Image 1: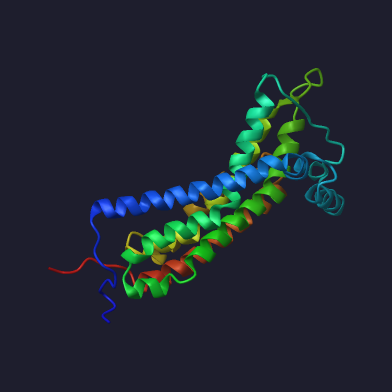
Image 2: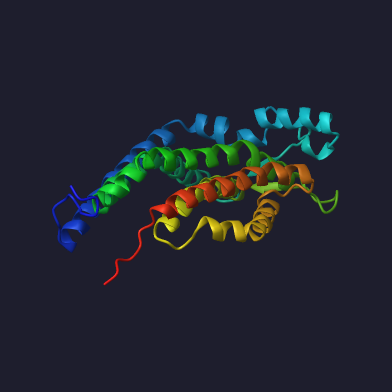
Length: 274
């Protein structure tokens, strides 16, 4: 079979639309099922996961304290931090419970959602392209979950303990609103998970000829500046060690993306000459 030919029957626009509708419906059902499970296990989701990074007993916080002694960086230790959460809305806690459950369902169900979308896109690829994209669901899911875990165990504790205990004056106490805490944690975790998809994005752009490894190498210094800026924004702590801790994986991802772009460019999808 010719590698440049499709091996699936052509479908009309409405048939594709109907297929996409079922893909989205199945994905929503899985997310809702997982969200219900998360809703039922309220204590575990909130006490063991969501609120854990603000505790001095959290594994990362204990590790940071040991590193602070070793590196003589006092700001890295949060063992004396006491962050008090409050709720000011009548329905605030219930709505937060619903919101967190949906986010938990979305994150937990992300591999299935990615698989469903891949099943929908895969028939439109040439046979040669399918060979180059084997394991795509696994790679995309792995990168996303790596970003989620990195954010949860590294960035979130730094963010919570720095911003939650920061004071302009000793006369002002921090009473963190529940919704503010939840939105900060969930948005950070999700955003970093998406950022870790950089190699996949680069692969796609390289395949369609919009980016090359030479372009990425040429603009490496600009990328470094952007990475440092992003690291400074998502890492509120003022010490350089924390920023390096966050920026290092992004540097590695960028270098890996250059290698991916080089390999993808060799088999880029170029427009056919008329």
